[in-house]
Amino acid sequence: MCHNSASTSSDRENFCFFRVYLGLLRLLLGGDSLIYSKGQEKKSVKMGYICDFCGDQRSMVYCRSDAAYLCLSCDRNVHSANALSRRHSRTLLCERCNSQPAFVRCVEEKISLCQNCDWLGHGVSTSSTHKRQAISCYSGCPSAAELSSIWSFVLDIPSIRESTCEQELGLMSINENNKSVGVPPENGNVSGSDQVTDLPSLDKSLVGTSSVPESSSEPPAGPANECLPKLYCPAAKCPALCEDDNLYDDFDMDEMDLNLENYEELFGVALSHSEELFENGGFNSLFGTKDMSAGDSSCQDAIAAEGSSVGLVNATQPACSNAASADSILSTKTEPILCLTGRQAQSNLSFSGITAESSAADYQDCGASSMLLMGEPPWFAPCPENSLQSANRSNAVLRYKEKKKARKFEKQVRYASRKARADVRRRVKGRFVKAGDVYDYDPLSTTRSY
DNA sequence: TGACGGGCCCGTCCCACACCATGGG
DNA sequence: AGCCCATGGTGTGGGACGGGCCCGT
Image 1 (cartoon, rainbow, N blue to C red):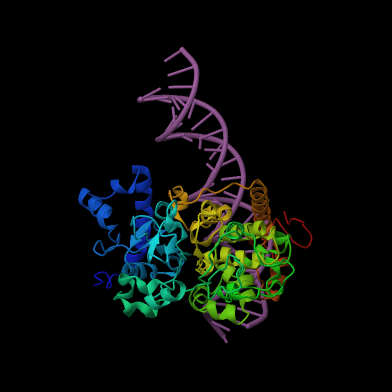
Image 2: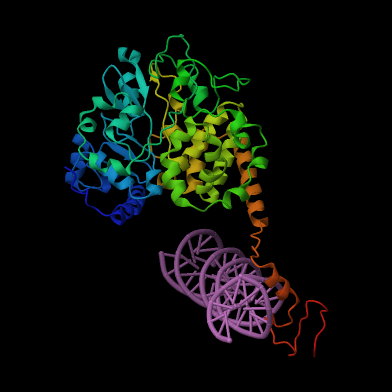
């Protein structure tokens, strides 16, 4: 049942705005429960939020940008409205509390859990040894099958498996990047992307470091790397983003802004084919010009800033981190599929695959997330402030603003002959005058006829 | 009575646009 | 043969912005 399948595109766009407004109301009124009627609140407590859009189905995913709880059908419907809504990062809802975004999936219990529920369920019991997978965010309008490609367990979830709105698949494309956080194949037998049983390196990796040797210019070998083949970008292929710490100097905003044409290609074709481009080495073309230009200038700036801050860490990881940054443009936010045990690094884990120190500012600059404007949701891990990176970012913003201010939109003269004639034409108060009439400005002699 | 916040007004700055005659396309 | 339009410097209108003032709490 998909009662809103006939809703118009404008309905869906209006819904996005409505969700931002609703999210603001939620914040102002002090909690979700105040938004819902008593009956609804009761319902939400007992069986989870109902879909904010159709108000009928149980919500399955949470959209941060819209601050919306949606069933899968409405999720696709709403987020297929336009290119911007397709970029919204969504994730599964916690199957235990049904109110917060799922953070990991317990393989043993086959249940998706938010941080709190994960902590409550696995923190101090024998179940703490349960293998758990980090749950990826996604954007675009993936089908259940596509979701299963980023969440291997997705078909375990009946409501996803039974999703009935497949008719809209034509509108949808998933843009996953399967971003790796660089967990090394410690035991040498980690198969696929799932079976990592420890987290010692996770902490670092999630804040921008990488277990990949710095000197390596090739994708790190090993099974763990298999989760990022579409994302990895050799430094040589994206020098502006990867090569050195002087990222901002190489990052030419002018070029970016001058390539703002052809949005259709940017958001339509390029977006849906980002996966191909990654595979075919088109990463540079994506991030070097067109796709990055697709974002607004502040967004580009945010990307540059984040790229720089991450770039301080090492030369390889930025390729991934920048991709993760740019995924706000490419609509490709996915976490690596990791299997977690223990409690390590939990406090540093960031939702949606964005490092803690970068996510807030980036999203705010991009204007993409109403959640950020309204304050972090309670499940959002606290962001340890890195003063150095903040300074770098501030400097980058300043440089960008200076550059933008100094930018000259030089007029393209199509007819040089006309320009030559205009350059010698006499004027009165800037206006051309007839030949022989009095003038107050002669470009050739600066004399006046009166 | 002083402090504070919000609303209103005014001055300044900035930007976009119209205006003009002419001649090449 | 005739129409269209691009060309550049200046004036002008309107919006943005900030500071000051007033009023209510």
